[in-house]
Length: 296
Length: 296
Image 1 (tube, each protein chain N blue to C red):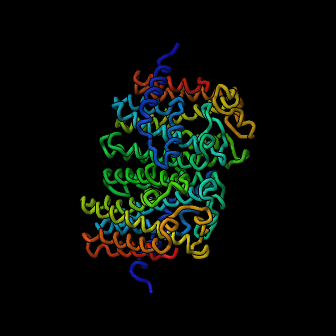
Image 2: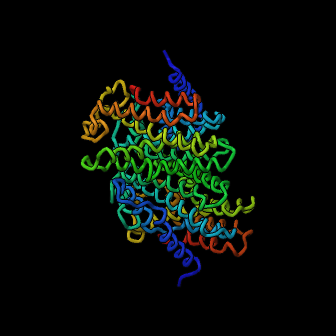
Image 3: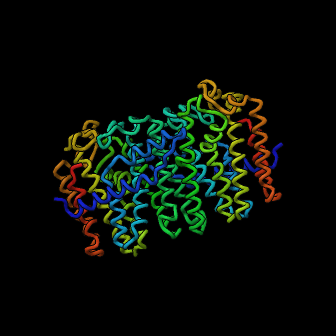
């Protein structure tokens, strides 16, 4: 039976499937190859977990959905861009994503690079639009946080560490920092953005940040567990790649069982930061539990 | 003998060489490969023509240099990002840029993709910082314009047209639109940004926009002329590539002599839009003349 969280996740996914196409350009000009690739990447499903985090964090402050949905859309553009570029032959060289050919397989490499580039720009275009929030101060705060989350001290820096760190460099401290940059920075942005939209007080903002840090790490450890345990059929993408590549992950460093214990502990710890929000934060609490229980 | 404009261009280049390193991250962590590539790309010289346009347009309104230099820096980050990605093997596949190995040659393809990605983010980070302008309204206006100039209806769209349009599709109308997206959008941003920083009146903003449209086109036609006429030694990059690739350019469509006449006419037309600024716009007028007279 579907629980409250399952229902919220499905409703968010439905909402995003409806809203996302509105932001994506469509035309019949010579640049249509780019437009098709952007739509293909963004509208190919996905759990929309990041969108849910933005919307649920904003709901804590009763932010109108018309605002939080736009920030969620911007973040989904960024998430798609990062997947497109990470899948490139010169990076992780993946052929499948969510059971479908990756963008450079469906189109070609140049289109994949350009579609990722244009999706990054589109996210900033969405955030800077007055429809996202009437106050320029709020919009620029969102832009500033997103830009930092993406850059050399965020996602791009984390991806570089992931590409170039040799296994001997990586211990548990290093991989934690790597993942906080590579995947954590965007999850933190998702949760913090809700607070920015809702004019969170400093303790509220701090609580969301602490929640997002533990959640992001629990999420990544679970990804490593799923790569080690899952089948390609379940996951819609290649699995066992980390082990095949001799890659250091939380699983290789901690062992499968300890990784599971650690992820569960982090999810509990994430929940504990939400006390000051009372029952309003129940869906975010369930999101933390889902993060470590999911099978894909 | 160096004229006023030559001096202004040299001073701008010197200023940017001094300022740009301040914005570029540096550390010794595992992500240092990314930081090195970003610095290599951005600090490799270049005419800094876009920086000059931002600063000179802002000077029309007596905008403090501490603000216009930051917008100029953001634009140079974007210009570097676009060159890194355009040079990739899957795009134009260039080995040399300003007489030096391109980023993917000096480092590797993954680093080149990530350095471009991180430089795009860095530009938005710079623009969103209160040091760029104390008013959030001004900063968000800059972000919004830059995001649109970069995206599917700007630079990325133009680059896609350039990659996928077959020669039979391209006439003078199409190539003009292609170039207005691919290179024109950023040049327009440069000129308009000065007006945004300086709270330009609608007629002033319109004049800068009209100037930038003609200038951008004159710039691109001149690029095509230089590709047809220049030697690799003069240009610091491969030349004659357009012809070798059977590529349609303004030169193949118009012939060399008519292309030169057209570029000169556009430069004159660009200048005519600046009348309302009086002698204060002399350096921008000279920039238009330089655009078509330059040899690199």
